[in-house]
Length: 242
Figure 1 (tube, one colour):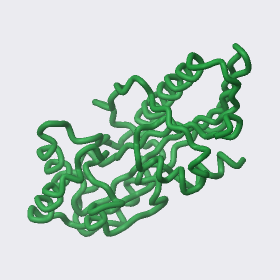
Figure 2 (tube, helix red, strand yellow):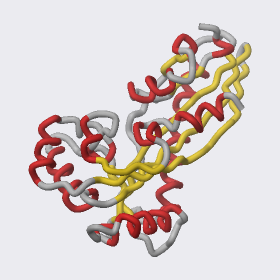
Figure 3 (cartoon, one colour):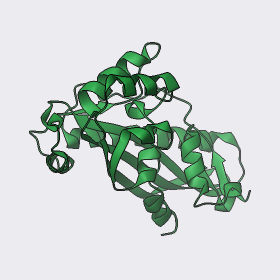
C-alpha cells in the first residue's frame, strides 16, 4: 500500500471500515484505532449545541491519539489522510416527542433541537451498559424511542498527515457533523423482548442496529442511512475527493 495515497481509519468499528471500503479501494485503507478507548460522556448534557461540542471534542481527542501513534511508529515518509468519526443517538428527554400519532409534530420538535433551541431537553443514548444491558434497552425503547422520532449524529474529521524524515505535520481538511432522523414504530413488549433476544443491541449506540434486525423497528428515515450506521458516506467521499 503506497504510504502517499492511504486513508488511515482511526476506528475499531467493522461497520465504518465496510462503509469506507465502499468509496475507497480497500488496499488503500489502513486501520489505526485510538490506543485510549476511554472517552468523555454526555451525562447531564441536554442542549444541542453543548452535546455537539462534546462530540467534536471526543473526535478531536481520537484524532490526536492516532496522530501521536503515527509520529512515533517509524521513520518512513508518509503522506496520508486520517479519518475519525463518532456516532451518537439523541432522543427527547422530557416526553414532548412521546405524543402518539403526531409524527409530523415530532419531526418539528427535532428540527428545533438541531437548531440549538435552549428550551429543548435532550438525552444522548450511548451503548447499553454491560452486564445488564437488557435493562437499558427496555427503558430506552419503552420510554424514549417507541412510536416517535430521534436523531442520529455522526461527527467526522479528515486530517492530512505528512512525515518526512523527522518532521511531522497535520492539517485538518474536514470537520463536520451530519444528522439523520429515525422514526420507530410503536413497540409493544413482545417486540421489545424479541429484539433483546437477538442480542443485536449490545455495543450499539441507542441499543439498535438499523442495518440488521433493527430495521424491523423503523418506519421512517430522513437523511443518510449510512450516517445512522456509523459513517456518512456521501459527505466523507466529498471531503476525501475535494
